[in-house]
Image (cartoon, rainbow over all chains, first blue to last red):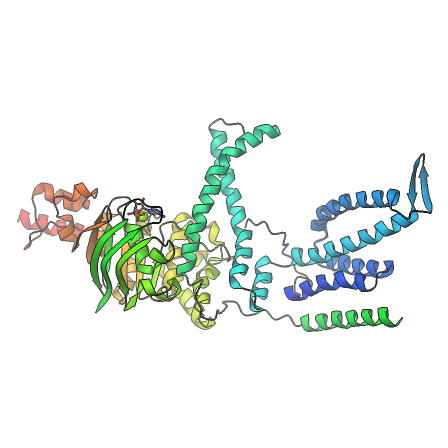
Length: 255
Length: 281
Ligand SMILES: Nc1ncnc2c1ncn2[C@@H]1O[C@H](COP(=O)(O)OP(=O)(O)O)[C@@H](O)[C@H]1O
Ligand SMILES: [Mg+2]
């Protein structure tokens, strides 16, 4: 099944944790390092996320994301290391260029924070079916319309891409160049926008009508075909995270 | 009992230049199987949509006259209210896929979830319609991975599962091969036999002639005639409306052979055969 979601179907206990708990985990991973801004705590949080990703057997999928993030962060490290106001202690001297300890330390904090958040998000995105997440949120009271839009985007965009490649194939078979230099590609792409965009606008209108007659705007309370998935551990995990957060706050205030 | 009453219905699309429906009046009894015919752009789809309230609620535009379905005036009720009584299947099966469900089974459940059916009832109904439309074998596939014909069956199944009193279908067999169309017509006839009122816009005149109790002929937004298939297809001016009678009728007309004991030509294979045998002695 074509899909643009990054979800990886695997058997693991991480996949079995409920989406809402994973959302809480993201929140947890963001606020703990804010409450306790020390290296050790950030490193522990990051370590936990990475261990979870390994258990979920999705480490390979994270590599492109991590590479991208590191690519962005390396520039932060360089700029802060070289130019941060308050740089005093030289750590490394290369000719006229000096790396400073203060700047590097500051940059490292940022690196840990960002990687930490990205990792927590990846736990959610890579191990949760988008439709499960949305269904969980709708059951919690999110508007079904917003839920519908989110889920359908995951299915309808790949459909649009299929349409696009069908038209591309048709054009290629009529001798139009669609590969090669960027300019050639762009030239081949532009005439597609008309039919594809117009087509999907018409489709959107027709789909909206089809949804209407299937009671999408009905005021009846909605029911669900699938039983609400029960996740035995979610209460426990949420409770642990709450306790840890409270401890962190206490630590910060009294020690 | 009158299931549908359309009274001097006039309608113009917001961007339309002319009236898409011009002063249309007719009545339909409970349990009838009605065919709507007419050439392209004659207003078939617009009329279908006027029965579920998409015209005027979805499009807006200028609206006059009355449509009453099962005692409910369309103009003063929401589409959600009307859709509990009237189900509609559209022409293009692809745009009827919600895009929010992973399997055909869940796709059919979409409407049932919206109207708040209990889970057990949902499962029972889905099972029933999967069987009726002969798509049980694809129930776990993604709705987008079906053939056009299977998608069309799924679209019909999704509406039938909601158990409407009135079923409106706009060219529901365009993507089906002849055998598939026949199966779908049979299934719809079964429903009609159970007392559901069926209204179907359709191009396949042989099918219309075979299955419909009455046929409504539209031309440029006007109602030309609304009568039994024999009467409609025996009209001499049919071609001026861009409609060709079923092939059996055309043959019998050419041979000058009327249906036994009446003034119209046969419209189905069976009647044509009877008429021919009768005339041969
Ligand atoms: N959304 C629209 N906006 C403006 N005019 C429309 C729209 N849809 C249909 N029409 C016009 O209304 C008339 C009837 O169309 P339609 O009901 O689709 O006919 P049919 O289904 O018989 O082919 C046509 O002249 C068509 O151009
Ligand atoms: Mg039409």
